[in-house]
Image 1 (tube, rainbow, N blue to C red):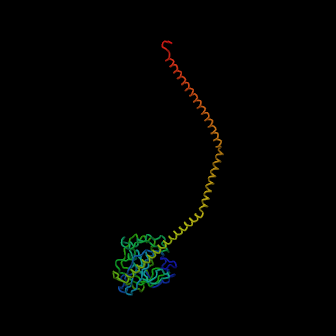
Image 2: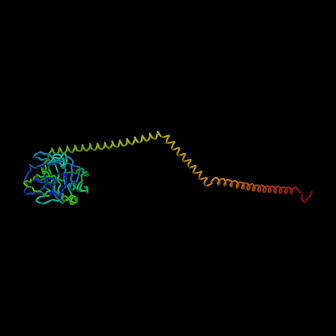
Image 3: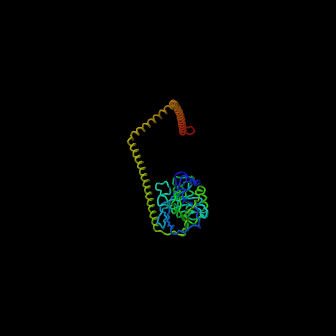
Length: 396
């Protein structure tokens, strides 16, 4: 896919102005006339080994582009050529037609010997093999529905162009194998990329079985990406071949290559994770070191100025005390509290003297009463004694 001069599917007829390869004689997509297909069981036979992957998505020219992890391969049995699955594009409606009929959706898996499908990349190499699966509204279950439902609801609203690649979280078993139909029979022809720069030299494998797909998946993708297809091109003198085998042959080389690649990828990811952890630990250690140094400098600064700081604090305390005392004196003088206190003290002394005199007078009166009572008692006793000593009848 070209990220060079702007282009759109609506003006595909004018692509050849900016992309001359679009005027070639072996362009894609095409209409597949089933009755005219010829057998190619051996010449176009392939083996396939797909592995689980992360879901890395970008959007260009209203087209979702899914980039897969390494580890998925196809192998042409006759030539022993092995190609690596790189990316996939999703198109609504289908690119290809069968007997003149289009389907609701088509996904194309692009395989190359090396390099990406982006023609502007420095590692780009022309040519490859495109494996196509078509879908029609139908079943709401199955791995194909799980494949699409895992990421379509997380695509951004800006459907025209998202230059950054998004890593969308998916399940551990998510991968391109979920798209492959149960029957492995397919059509085969020579064509081109279905979008600029439309370079030829691409071999196309179009699965015969049309997969059922949930209507909600179709409707969700149609809102953002409808009509992101190039019109069917003339087949010309090309021949569409047909491989009737319903199963892919087992290939030990592909199995080993996929396993080795996946193992290397896991090691690489583990190293990257370890490196990231080490970076985080190093950053955290550096941060704690900076904090410790700052604490040490603060402590050293405080100790070196401890007496000075104490002196300043003591001076501030004395100043506050003096200030408070001055404010208190000012308040006492302003309200004439001293005179009031002296007057109260003087009044208090006079009252005490009066009370003392009153108390002494009462005590004197009480003493006089006591003395009077004593004199009365003595007089009574004398009278009684005199009465006891006199002779009866007054005799002498």
